[in-house]
Length: 389
Image 1 (tube, rainbow, N blue to C red):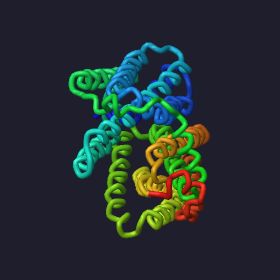
Image 2 (spheres, rainbow, N blue to C red; image 1 turned 45 degrees about the horizontal axis):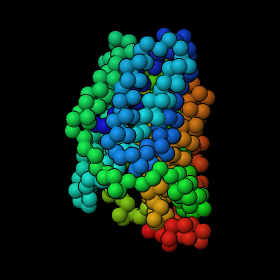
Image 3 (cartoon, rainbow, N blue to C red; image 1 turned 60 degrees about the horizontal axis):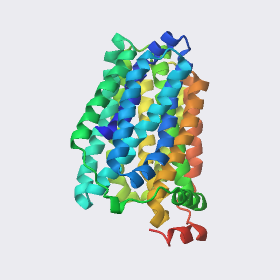
């Protein structure tokens, strides 16, 4: 629940964006910044909370960030300026990143081997359910105004914070903590840049996450303003697409053993390009909304198919610095994706044709990059990583 709360706070907000636009007297395209700022804040938090929890312990960092998260949600309904609202959402994204970063570290501290795999499988199952349920919850709450969504997030956050105070134990003893130091992170980032395969994997993540983020910021305007769906129909469409993501996760587990990471990355890039390249023609044809949704969902299948393989491609050659490299890759890919996603969202304004052309361009770039998947790391990277995994 802790790890999923950050994603839930994005998806539950989507049905309420039009209400926020009306209250603050801004256009619906400008209202997308409420989501975009959150995603950019989330990317920066990945650099911050990992080192902080290694130095100060998991429990105080998690409790402090979670406490500020639910308090900020409780304060948002009283904000009267749109700029302040966007700033508050960026802060919430920063704080929400602690839930995933520190929560995952907590699991890693406490469990090993098959036990850790079982716990993470449970975590992932809850995480996948969040984007299915969140739009329904948001659509229901939006009937009482967009402020009700933030009030709900504040109540849920406060409940989880109370549980964490009572039940969550410290898993990193003082003797195992490391002084707060940023140098290993910068060294890991340099290793990524100097390792061609890792750089390709990180770039692929940035492009495909950019497609995801563009969809997140644009979906309410795309479905509701341009395609005429109600809040409830939008929630159903969003949840249905999330099920395609779940199917892609299951297919990835079956294919990666047969094809290997590099071949799967290339195959996923080809599939994604073919589907996304046809999307502008479908959007321009002004056909059935259901068929357009299905086309989008099929593209999402390819996006999700790329995520785990591109992550493995980025981290596999980095050996001993893989932990710090994970933070560096996570920050770089999500930060660039946030910039790309916000730019595409602002440019398209929810227009299906423009949005489709943007997705097609990103898919084409991913296809070109995938041709370099499998390049060997150079000697400078091997020296930093101690010879590879």
